[in-house]
Image (cartoon, rainbow, N blue to C red):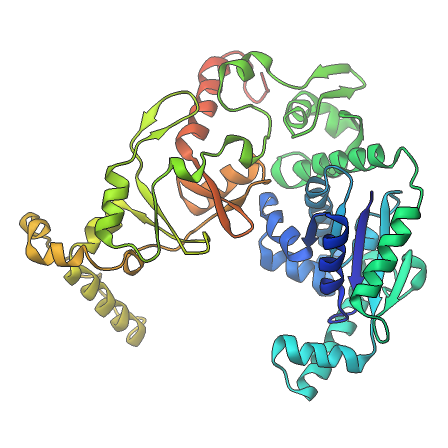
Length: 467
């Protein structure tokens, strides 16, 4: 099979076509919103990515070539999402992101302005004039983006293998046509291997650009069958050993080769001793399943959350038993809604504390520049054993839960996990599959493997040099 890249002029029907193709071919669909969200692993916010990929660049971005970095992040993410060399990408720039790969079938979906206007009105609740203005601005913005980043006209049919006009063709008919073409098309046998090399190469370059202290533009990277060849000038040679060590730990790298010879990619001894690999593995490989960590429904009470927390013990991969500190709160659809700590549970038993905090918040909103510090409420120990505390324990846990400050997806790397923990100051990161909870990763087991490495190897190398 192949990777089907579907782009469109906004509201032409690409999303519906992707769904139809998934039904017929059983391929995974990745929308550009999902890929943008996954680019968090490289320290890029979703807002940055949206601006970088959907809007023409300003003078600073063009001068610093930041747009190309956004594209690199997308290529690295999509390379992981389509690791088997097949799938459906629905979104902007697929014709460029996968340029030169022989297993990509590039589709452009178009439709007349009246068709698109009606779709925008229905999808976004716009008036006719608002929809026309919205689409006109979107078309102009994307045309500028294509010219600035790729020096190309997005409407040029030469960029695509197939252009589909949905004015007089149903989405179902278009899907049947594309399916028929793909089943008859002969892709070169080497296409899957070519895509695998492309995916690994982009992942290594992105890791160097976004997650390392090294000058990525001074390093030439070539990947072939899991072997990464590194070369460069004087700047690369000065930090060669450290760069090699860094690259060897990128997911999918089997070994690293430089002009100085082949370098082993993994510290096998450390790997065999630990529950977590020193490789940049995926979240799904190290997470605890949701049933192993306390959780309750959004409709549960504070008391039920306390029961869930008190009756739980978490067994880590190395057999260590720990007492959990949080309760995950999920909805009826298994989507993660929030998190409750022991601290929040205790605060929930003191209703006057919440009332006072709300009062202070209202005062700060009215007098934003007022002086002074929030007043302190003296909580009496005996109040936690009062009738008021018992009554408060029957309140919904939704009234005290905190919003989730950071999550990762099951296919995100441990680089993303630790970055999320440190950026948001949390020691538990929920792992999601789509919007549903698939597991959790605790700072405890992440820290333990790093601590083991430092304690065992920290004295073996010279300062500033990888062991």
